[in-house]
Image (tube, rainbow, N blue to C red; front, side, top):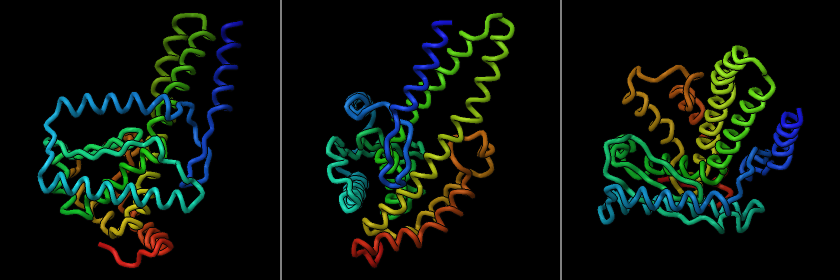
Length: 271
């Protein structure tokens, strides 16, 4: 009983103490991993990945990745400074690398460490398409989505432990573990991940526009993603990402708003 009470109190205190404000939405988010803890781990993992993969340093495509990344991160800093968050990026260490691989993917680790795979470049079809992807990946880092996922995963694990402590007989405990595993994944973790992807789409669209890239291109890129995927995508409710159709509709709706935001920074024409 004492262990159960201690665990429940711990979960409650973590939830209360772990709220952080997302500067782009103004909403409180679950995050109890400070940058001072998560950034060094991310930087070490990134360095290890780079040392083990084929990084293209001096090609025109690699230089384009760096150029776009610098423009996007600079636009993010301008927006943050203008909206009351100067110094928000002081611990970020931006780095942009192109890795030779057929994977159609890109990612950004906490703290601003970014990788593009060469496999995604034909889908991007040029610098503006790269800016769509770059804005999205940078947005994940800006909004602390990695730390939020870790925080949610910790609470998910604590919930499982609490259930196993509370349930005494093995049969009921096994049934709980099966139900909790599926229920917490489909009902909590997957929607949580999809919300992050949607948020990164919207923030990224805004940042790319401030950087001078045309946000109308975002929906076009995802049309190409959809065509490339064919009919192989899982149902949205079983996926970590929104469906291609959902993303295309959202990005089409948000593009004019991103242009309006860019105009506040004197950006009236787009590449």
